[in-house]
Length: 415
Image 1 (tube, one colour):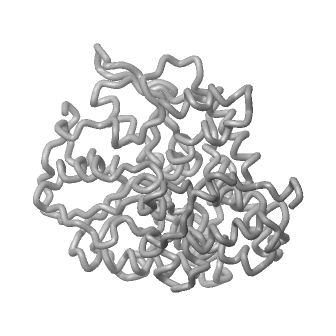
Image 2 (cartoon, rainbow, N blue to C red; image 1 turned 45 degrees about the horizontal axis):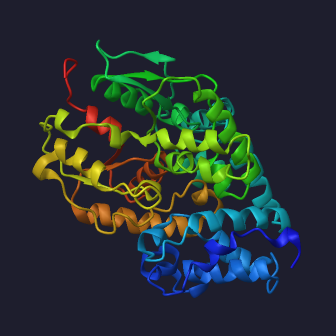
């Protein structure tokens, strides 16, 4: 086996005992019934590529590509197999050794690498969308472009946070806030809501100007070197601030931020700094006190969708429910398969639209069956996917909202 093929952490790969307890948790296996589309099957394929039994060829690559990276298998696994790490290592190897078709190469290079991680580029890319919608010219677009447009919210609410937002004195302390790259463009109001919630609960909110993309899109699509560049930039941006925590309101980004230590473990100049940074990262929901929220006067039934990278990758599911229940009280209803992926999975709904659509329909049907009029979640990708799915299903009576926006609903200025 060549040195170039030594891409997997062998000890982590061998920690899988192939018991199969992960199968019923895996969305793609539930949809296809194909063992190769399960975590267990994919680990077999990863090890076969590593050993040289298989090359980075179309058949095994197809099964790896179809993985959502939702990490539900990690929740199920009694052996604690770090499947997410193995998947990223494998995808990094694949991108260096497998030549994709022209469409996929362009899609991944333009959208994933060159547009989404850069807010100003994303804003420019969305200008034609506004015009097309205004003139109702969507029918002229090719199918893949229409499907991409359908994922975007009808109202694009961009906005940038100030560098400082101070709480009433005396403050409890100060927290750093990670703006993200998609959030300021599509959900700037949600970033504003998040900062306001923190401020109301006594925290000064610092938003460093040198920060950028967290690197999640790169890591998940097999570009680990670029993900490491993002990590170094963000660590440097937040260092030197006397912060009690570094807050993120996007679950997919948070799961990458908390793993900067793993990402940079082999970089002696950054490994300790990465560990120190990750130790301070907290999802917004963990930093809020549910006792501070009054029960909403609305009679809407409310449910909650678990974002995979909060529930499975970070192990946080009880706290967001407690917050939602504090507002909704006895109007809260549980969602069937609430922790099953909605099909967004970062850029998955762009690169694998067929499977993403199947999972979207499954999720939306559960929401409709629950009788809820509001579905709350903690990740922008999930929010886009669910909003789009509800719109396609004609479920216009149901609204999907980020938890930060939901928690601020009905709160008075002096709360």
